Length: 317
Image 1: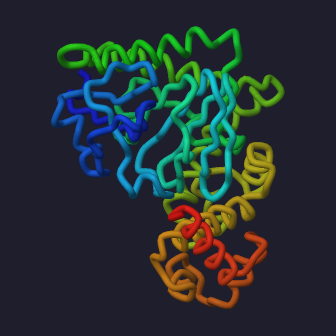
Image 2 (image 1 turned 180 degrees about the vertical axis):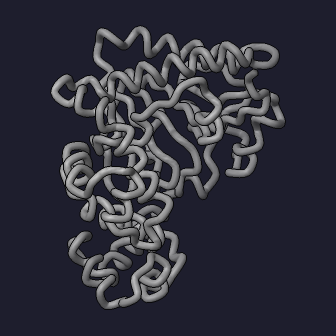
């Protein structure tokens, strides 16, 4: 039986933002599904929504996501900043963003035709199927080419969800679950459409998924590759082969890339001093951490912090 308390979140920009007369902050957006008894939030420029909405000041700047966010561009090109990298989304492409990533909306993202949608991890756990593409196992920069032949089906799913959610009365829970599952299934198939890796992915995806979860949950304790392989009940050489085939790097390199990404995120939010950060991330020797950071980020921590300050000043201009 479906849980009636499935929560969905949406962070969105209304296309005619100059008409906005209400600004929602993060907490209001998070709680809105409970206030309005709506199970899913989705929006497009054509939605006839009663209250034009603007993002609060915090969301106009880089922020750490707490949900999965989807941007499907039908007309018009946009560029999002994701974990300090600019990603261009062209017509016919869909960008999916993951929890914990640092995201910044484009300064002008209101023209063209698009859909935006966000869902929580709790919601995904309650759907009737899982969707491996949301782990981004191929590290393909999180942009999916929808293709002309698939456009009508993808648009129909988004449009149906939008109609159900913003229609009169409460959204039909069963319909929302059905259309959302169909949409995510379509995206999952498109993500893995490369026939050259399809069979390899099917055979190794389960192992890689568990490997990635161990890294995500235990990276601060610096688990050895031997330990991870034993947890997965495979040999080190088999783990190396699987991770290399899925990501192009070794398990050790994958681990260090993950730690360095988390380091950049923490520095962005000024959560720790560089020395405190090294201990927070499980390094006993700050000097070693500083050397590793410079190797993987092509600049020292000091230089990286200076670059963040310069970026912050540009945003405020």
